[in-house]
Image (cartoon, rainbow, N blue to C red; front, side, top):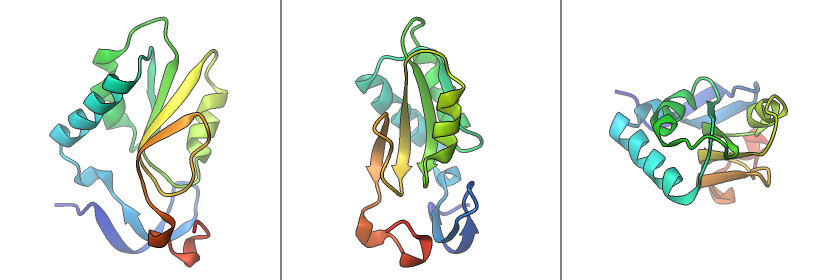
Amino acid sequence: MTDLLQFGWFSSSTSILLPWKIDCDALSDNDIEAVARLIRGKFVFGNVIGIPSGGLRLQQALTPYSEPGNATLIVDDVLTTGTPMKVQKTKVHGPVFGVVIFARAPCPDWVWPIFTVNDWAQSRGTGLG
């Protein structure tokens, strides 16, 4: 079984060294579906794009709720720097917004976090807080 919070040294997807990580592989399929229900209750969206690899489960859970003709939704499990979300946004034509389950750092103004890690929990060693 995977723990949601893990301690040690981990490299983020953008190669930042982190003394702890949030591992959403610990979330059950029911947990991911519950997050999808939260998102669909707040937003109307068309195409859903998941950031590999963490956002792919959320993309799968959200796809049945997509309504063609609406803005593209980009999703990820954990935002640390926001770089993967920003890169994906440049590939989308038309309106786009994002949602992440956890934000370890401030999100761009077009990304909505469900849960935000406050400054107290951040480590000086990450450069994030």
